[in-house]
Length: 409
Image (cartoon, rainbow, N blue to C red; front, top):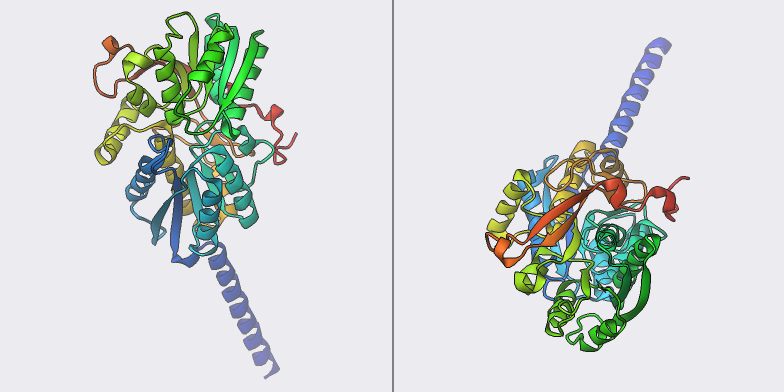
């Protein structure tokens, strides 16, 4: 009798233990709330709306559709918001998404000040945020987070390609016209580093507000400096306005060179090849680079009616890499998914041999590009030529220089 009871108790214990183990395994590998929800926050109508904006939302939606609309049998949902170029709106929307709407991952195309605020929130809430449109290197330095990924480009990479090329052509004295916020100051700082490393000089700098319409006083001061190069450390319509007005003042024709430190296909389109021809800049993607980029970009064009910028292409790539990692791990848990994303090399139309480092920086090849002359263009979006490939380890800040506390030295 005692032996029978002992056997029964042993069997019951094994059953309970097995059930507990199974339950814990299910908890460890499951989709929270039975849905994978992605939040896309962009500028939908302001000065950066063409760079990321509605096109960035469409790129994420396109990735979800291509993935099949479900992951591990659970539905994938996409929500989006316009942050209106305001840090407080970006932060409050991200907080609402995480706390109320149970968004599992946020991907952005915002300014650097907004992205830095969201980086802190992601660390606090232990929720993954992918930065596709912002550029400040602070995201992978002092302000790095185990939940943040800087995916497309940053000011270090932009400066490395463009400033080095212009310095090699003899442009060894610079004057900066800089957007007065985190992105602009970071881009100016990183470009200054390259100029000084190559024995060049910075003769001065002046700051302009976001969404400036009149650059005349800034350009006249830059012209009066006699610097060989006027560095535009801004983006979007600010860059377009500065380049257009520089042409009106005859700055380039009088011998000074413009360095557009951040340039997108949409900027060139807005300016026109006559005004933009010859501009050198660094990019992380060009739609017409090879057969693979053309194939994807033509599909994107079909839904957006414009060729993709590097931000929009990067948002698709990042979303795909995230969903593949959710599928591989069987969970949308941020720590598990992040670990898988960092372990897995990225090989798609956007990046070859891309990888996410411990500081959150996704390193991949960048490209030095030059705007075509009108006579060289063979179509509406035939805008630039790639002058050289900047290898990933040259393009991005080495870990040995990182101030990210996650980096072991």
